[in-house]
Image (cartoon, rainbow, N blue to C red; front, side, top):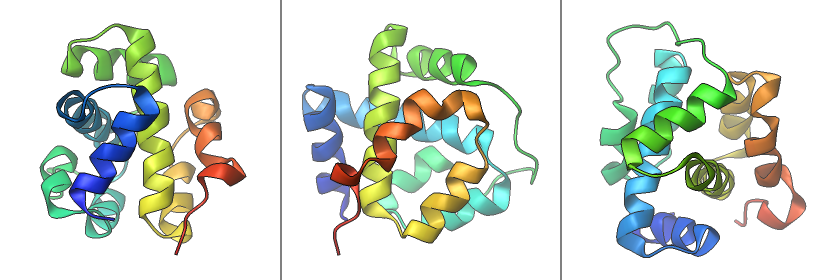
Length: 135
């Protein structure tokens, strides 16, 4: 999936303009990168379009993942994207669903293993059959 298609899909899922979807995507990916181990961030970045790499910071300073729950994840996305938490939660769901379509199922599973159970509300829509990868 190319960058434009990724952002356009997030825009469609969030009901926002593409420029706003790009901001929401970057905020979500940057927050996700903080929650994942450095090696997994690099693995994820390798499967995404290059314009998204900056948000993932594919050269992390540390291998360790930060430990924070879904509430903090949403709050960080909201701060980064300058939006309310409901918008941030919708954006996170859209980005997870788009990731599911954009990367291999094995890599998506590796990303999901990094997240605790309280992320289920954001992740489960990405696991639904309608959002499954198309290859």
